[in-house]
Image 1 (tube, rainbow, N blue to C red):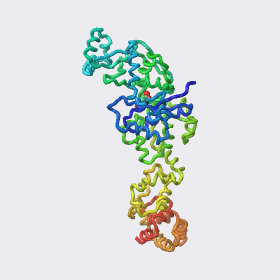
Image 2: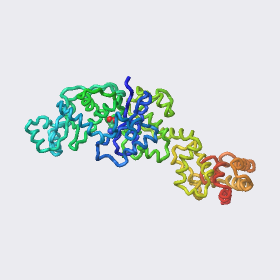
Image 3: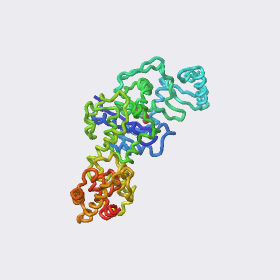
Image 4: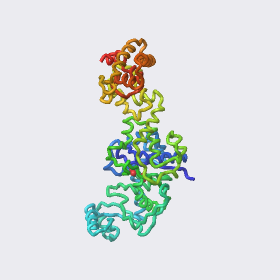
Length: 478
Ligand code: GLU
């Protein structure tokens, strides 16, 4: 078997989107599973849409996810470089010439105004889909010579065969068929000399020895166009697999404008999601291992990835599941890694100048088992940085009759503590129970609301510890 070579081919038009990240991931997993190469190619021929820093950003977030390319613009294999399409224009021109020569393509001198007018006329006449009239295919030799003498700008169009069938076995959908009669003569090189996506992609996939192509289903209808070029140049077509859509909980395709779902890897990193959790989550968007297993390490994913288990139905982006999964990864972080993830959020939000690292680490440590993403810590630890107030939901306990008894006893016990630590605080609470006979909810909710103002929070003894002895006494002296 040929060495597996796959590519992720983004246009540098912005940050890494979850749909593209999934495409990159599945190509990567497939390559690594089969011991092949994963290539990053930059499809920058749509020059108006390129954004400054778009390429760097794609790479930056792939690296964040640990989806490392074997070949890329900065990691060239001399046999295949360059990896940016705008640096390959000479290469495309060779094949444009070859197709012109073989009469598989022809020059089209129509202006955009003429084309526009023609399409309008077709629409007015009720044609369901407009297509190029082939006016320039039928130019006489004299007309062509006149255009050339006048140096009229031209584009190059593929002369689509009249009755050809394009059938391929999609790795996900099975057999798919298109007919050439449904496709008009399309442009392979624009008047500005830049090839179109459907043309450049074929030249590159061939010259880069790409064996398999996993991409989004929006490219399915491009595939017959690409197949005709492969056929005309007498090249072997790679194996295609078109992945199904990612949809929201209402079954609608994720739209980049939908603000209810974070869709860019940059947003996830900023909010304190973990790259391994993101990879794990994305691996299940349109793929499944065929059993109940849901948490996989990077290496385990490579080992078990099986292209035959890519799903045929749309994959639902389930936010809750992502939260659950990220939490699972946070739970098992080492203290150092957990602190590295979480402390920056605390420090960015609150004045910690009078807190020790030990205090901060103890505080955030109380939330490790429940934290869903780094930034969530900000709300959770808020009570420890703000002036004491009693939450509305806590008032019932704060004002209960038993709470007054708890208050007096706890004040005594707290005052008596010499070594301020969680063990002694726990013992103090226990003593309050013994002395007052109050236990269970009235005791704990009373003590909690008196000391923290909240009816919920982390382990009570630790919460009291973190608030500090003097402040606790202040609060108990209300
Ligand atoms: N540049 C294309 C895109 O960003 C790549 C499509 C393909 O993989 O062929 O969608």
